[in-house]
Image 1 (cartoon, rainbow, N blue to C red):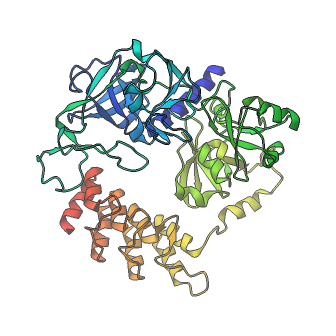
Image 2 (tube, rainbow, N blue to C red; image 1 turned 90 degrees about the vertical axis):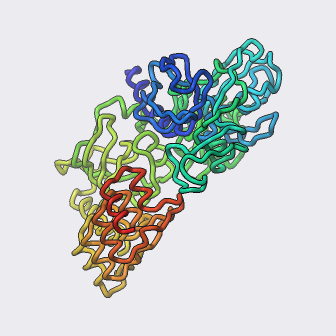
Image 3 (tube, helix red, strand yellow; image 1 turned 30 degrees about the horizontal axis):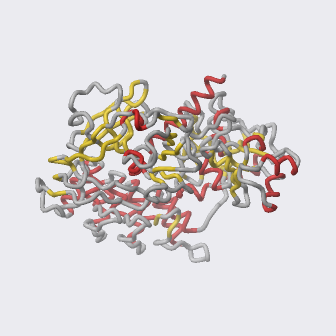
Length: 540
């Protein structure tokens, strides 16, 4: 059973790593066997995407893109994870004063509270005889490395100031560079955004030397450390209580976050583990919104609440057709969704709502239809209300199934919500009925639900009849969502040329750009949606 738990935790961690590792700068690793695909020893590339937990796609600075191994055999080392947005909140580099530290954190093992960022660590700051802990990510277990004085350095080469570059495989900035094939010179490496330092890049033509790095000290891409699990067995998402007397808790908290009177709520309330720091102390979130740091000796797992690890090792208690209710605690659901379909803000309307299980995946995650949409949920994020055969679970408060069904199918939202859902489902008749209402429940044809208008929802799903009906009712063809995407962009995302044709007939601007500076044609090209590409070319 223990091995199954470990496997389930590793699988979840692998999923998170795949999401968080995109953008990392890498060099060849210890198991490299691909000749000079990378340009040679020390040449740098960027993680483009993960094909699976075992295989990663890297675009080298010389323009070559290829797949490499990141499990079992490790073809790559992580040179710099700062472009992925990994940061260590509450830390500061004691040399350059970067705050917080982005990428890998290097903590001196021989000095009290002394940290370096990767640039300063490889730049030989601080005492070279001192050993350091490598901390790859917040909550990751520390890895002790040899003193730099005894270690060899490797010169890295690629896109650094002074390099000559041309546009790369993902170029989408039209002719800002003067046209395809034109060369430029890198003056400096900048941050693509505040959350992704050192992340803007081209393809190098003539590379230059970067800094020298301690190659053997770098982590292997795909090598999963304990990450979000501590030696105490707790992990992020666990529900915990404090069952000790106040005096004992206060004593144990010395040196582990301390104690203040406001923390009394912790003695009578169940909290959720949201972090494990480098000292293995536990960060717990409470319903009040407060987060407190505890000595793990203070914490007791709540045995009445299944943990993600436990749920992955046993047969699902759910069956297709079961009625379930989604947890109403947004922060808890967001935590539980990590590695289980993830969280999207458009899921917010489903919180606290009742749905029906449509499918159970091999890892026990659930596909649930709720609010006329389907989402993948961690089984710990929902509560079983009734079985597919109509029977109530043993721990049910006794509510009759007929009442549950009534709650399931009753209207849960506004007329705008009804309209957007009907449009997404392609129900043109229902859309007409909702728009024809004359009472207070009448919908706004341009109203927004879950961040989208009815026209945008219909466009993404290719419902041409709905589009025509909405346009006839006065729907604004060029309304934008929070990402700047219009209905035409949504049609391109969904590969719906018919929807694009209907929108063009309604006067939609097919050359409009979203906040990523993309037109529908750009989206069609990036996603290889040939039908939309042809239609966009015809219409524009």
